Amino acid sequence: MTFAQRLAVATALATLVLVAVGVLVRATGSGLGCPDWPTCHGGAVPPAHKHAIIEFSHRFVAMLVGFMVIGVAICAWKFYRHVPFLVWLATLTVPLVGIQGLLGALTVVRELPPEVVATHLLTAMLVLSCEVAVAVAMFVEDPRRTDSPAMRVAARPIGRLALVAIVWMAAVLWIGGYMTESGAATACSGWPLCNGSVFPAAEEHEVVHMVHRYLAGAFIFLIVPLVLTAWKQRDAVRWAEPVAIAVGALYVVQVTVGALNVWYTFPDALTISHPVIAALIWFTLSGAIALSFYAPAIAAHSKPLQKAGAVV
Image 1: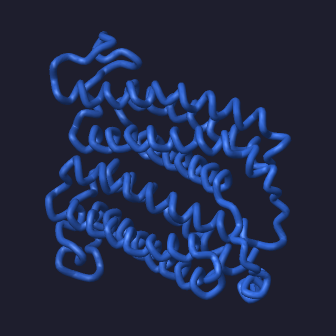
Image 2 (image 1 turned 180 degrees about the vertical axis):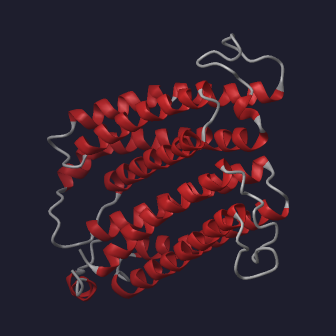
């Protein structure tokens, strides 16, 4: 594995950590632990207070991810300049991270409006998808790989289903983020019914809560075909089997954790686990899409990759 590949993979994984820390901020009620931005209580170092430290740790990890994204972009320009898609995607991820940071600042300045919090979460997922695509492209461009055109053709049905699934999941995530921050998470006291009914009452919080459940439940009609298709293609596509297992297992765990959250009134551990598992599903879908549709550049690339591969 080259240095550029290592950095790209590390950046994607660090973004997963960033999502987890962001969820910790919400679960512990630390969203306004630092009431100002970019300082925390007027200083560069947070005071020795639990909520301030948790909120500031989120900012610190976000800053670290930002620098790593810039590093990946520099590697793309240095070692993969012959691959326009890779270079430009890595470059465009840098301002996307900047937009994510501005949304984070807006979240603090406007004191956690639900629509901004939800958009902040979804933007983090878009950043994650870009990072996964860049990492996959770097690996596919490695001349030591032996992926055949026939394997890419066999993978296309998986990629198409994963693409539809991730678009649907974007809606599930946005509504879920809005639900949590708006106070609608506790509007329904039971699961799968909402206060004893299949349909919500004419009350905003119940409606928001149940829309999230309906979208998450309907997601199974996309997940099952994806898992079955990937499983059938496991002999032709070498990464299809782990994708099928990961997506199927994560979805089952995600639904279970969602139900347990309601039954046990949202304990911190389950509250944090729910969106983190969602991020892992998103990560897997992003990887399946990139692996299905990305084809290596036609230009010869052995020379630049030899430089990039100096660290193994």
